[in-house]
Length: 315
RNA sequence: GCUGGGGUAGCUCAGUUGGUAGAGCACGGCCCUGAAAAGGCCGGUGUCGGCAGUUCAACUCUGCCCCCCAGCA
Image 1 (spheres, chains in turn cyan, purple):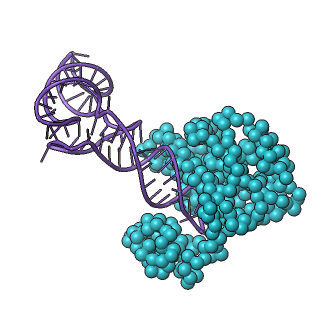
Image 2 (cartoon, rainbow, N blue to C red; image 1 turned 180 degrees about the horizontal axis):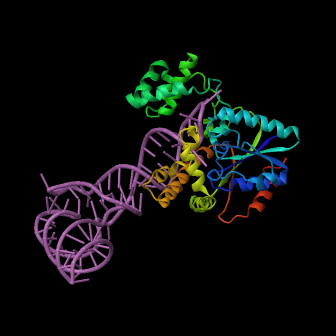
Image 3 (cartoon, helix red, strand yellow; image 1 turned 135 degrees about the horizontal axis):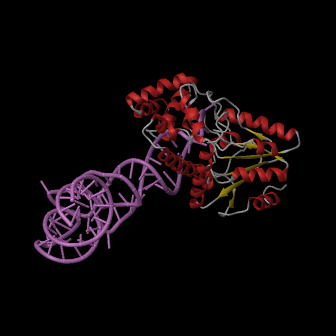
């Protein structure tokens, strides 16, 4: 039994294609998406609705409330359970989504270190704020030169994590992170020892086509009540965890809710933010060991799905 | 029509007391091991509105013209 995986950035049309493939394969869909795991974040995340879920069973959606934090490891465990469940019922797991880090966590695994310690992080972040990220980098250089060499002196996020792991384990970080070895070897793209056998397909579209689709997608979201959903996130910002507050589709509207910015300007920033998101997703995906599937602007999804199921996804 | 302000990167604008220009955003590439739609790094871009004059040299000074904005008619 091998996993079927459809890789694609935001607005690439992967969900729609996954749905068609799932019907043909009698598969169930596992969403690989760091935002769709949150309940109540529906419109901005383009989460599958009741109709889609009635057609094909979905996993990986609505796993936690918006005030909880959720990690890549949490995702990998949930996905492990979903895969076992699907397979036990004689069905095929079809994964689709845009969060590259979650694929890495599931297929390659993360090192067996400690989880996040939010209080510890808060202290380190405060230091970075006051003394600059460079101070953290200098400290890391003393404690773990190899790790410091790999992390840029301005990358607060990773410096904090490295110092956190050292504080919690008493061991340097550099020797622990060995799971992804070989990923870059030979031009990149190979997983050294994948946790599951899989076939992976990557959706490719012209950038200009993608930008068009993003524009249309945002208009659709606005018509469906994005403003109200974003307002709810804004109003609950003190109790929601950081992740929903960082999602593309909410943070762009905060200046608008605060007053002083027009709705149109906010929509424009959302467009740019989504374009940027797609860029970074594609940077990851290009290196994944996937077969490329080019989708022309007007491609007929059902035909593509039929070909895919008869081709890469057969057997 | 008059007066004033302005025309510089795709957009918003800065700048050069004359030596052919820059920031932010956009756009593009890359990094990424428990918050990843986050965090970080790198990059190109321009007939400096047009034509003429002064000058070794004009985007910068002068003249004329065109366009935009505001006020007055």
